[in-house]
Image 1 (tube, rainbow, N blue to C red):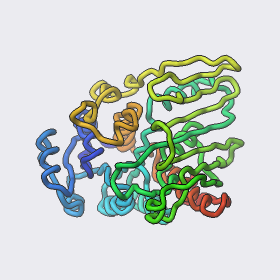
Image 2 (cartoon, rainbow, N blue to C red):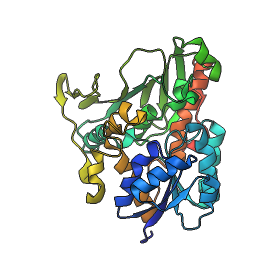
Image 3 (cartoon, rainbow, N blue to C red):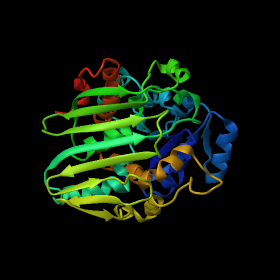
Length: 371
C-alpha cells in the first residue's frame, strides 16, 4: 500500500484525452504527463488541461523517474510493444483494449508483470459500464439464482475509421463482448470454437486475409458447467452500433436492449419487465462521480468516434480509473489483471484462428489461466 499520490502519464491523446480530467480530480492521482507524437496536438491538449510535462517521444517519457504508471490509448498494433517497454522501465500499466494482437505478445506481458511485480490492467469498458454493474449487482445479491448461460455481441460499422481497422478480423477486437461473459461469473475461458459467416468487400480482405463479415464464438468456461456465445462484426453488416450483454439465470435473466436508448428487459420466470438502468456513480469518490454522465467528448464541437458509437461507454471511464488507482494504492491485483486480460484477449485471437479452420477447437494457453 502507498499513501502518496501516483504520478500518471497518458499516452495517446485522441480517446486518451477523455481520461485526463478524471485523473486530475481523483484523490489518489497526480495527472503528471502526457505524450503525443503530434506536437501541435500535444500542446493543444497540454494547454487546455494545464499539464506542464509533455513528451512527443514515448521512449523519452519512460526515462522520467517520477512517472509511476502509464495509461496507453494508442492504436491497437502498438499496445503490446508499448506495454512491454513501460513494464521494463519500471512503470505500472493501464492499457486500452485489446492487450495485444498475438498470443505470444500476451505471454510476454504476463511474464513481465510476474517477473517485475508491477501491475497491468486492461481497461475494458463494458465490465465497468452501468449495464454490467446492474447485472452484477442482481447476481451478487442472489436475485438471478444459478447462472445458466451468457451471451454478448459487439456489432459496429467501421467504415471511415483509420485505415488500420480496414479488414480487421472481427474477433481480433472482441474484448467488449468476451469481457462481460467472463467477468460476471469471475470465470476463465478454457477453449473456444468459432465460425465465420458471410464475406466483406474484396479490397478489405487483402489487408489481413480475413474474409468474414461476422464471427460467432462459443466459449467453454474452465471448471464450470457454463458456456457463453459472443458475436462480432465490423464491416458490410447492416446493424445499429451495439455492445450488448445478456445473462440468463434460473430466477431472473437480463437482456440488453435491441435498440440504443430504449430500455433493457429483466425476465422473472416468463414475466418480462422493461427496466431503467441506474447510474453507479455512487460507487466512486465524489470528486469523479460526475464523470459517469459526462466527459471530454460530450459536446457537438468535441466528438470522438469511439465515444459517439459507444454511447459514452456506459459511464465506465471513472470506474476504470478508480479500479486501477485503488489496486495500486492497496497493493492488490486489479480486475482484469495481466492473466485475466490475456485470457480475455486470447479468446478473440484464437477464435479467429478457429474460424479460419472451420470451427476447430482452440485451447487457451496455460499462462492465461489462474489456478
